[in-house]
Length: 172
Image 1: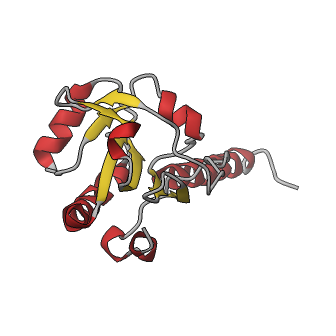
Image 2: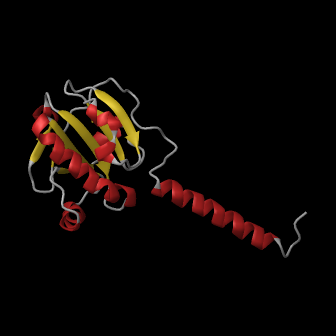
Image 3: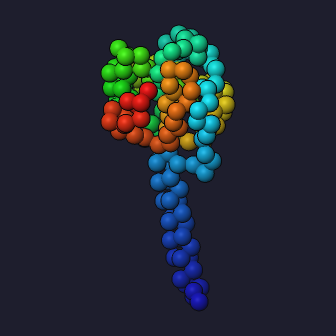
């Protein structure tokens, strides 16, 4: 039995352990709800604007293999994997592979500031109402979909990856 003097210390240790676990889960991009699981289904259609004001529609990418990354400026693992995703984009452009970054942020300004610090060559698209993320069932960030040239989702990956070396990209 825990004595009265020990109870606050035990409660404090439990709180710290719980808060630490929650923080690590957040940083790892984990969530209880599983993301879109209809691998083999089509990427939902979209028509959204990037941070430079250019419109992007799913029809624009017909016949193109895609790495569709859902990220947020406030997400450390999301920010950390951006240079790797940019390398994938630059390497893949000549062979019909594109990276699209769909940002959770509703305001383009933090995304523009991020791009100034971490230049990327792929479009950073604002999913303002989270309509695309919700249609897919994105529950945590980063989450990335690999989409084949025929528009089918081949993989849903939760959490950051060492992208240039990820074998699933070669299958696209």
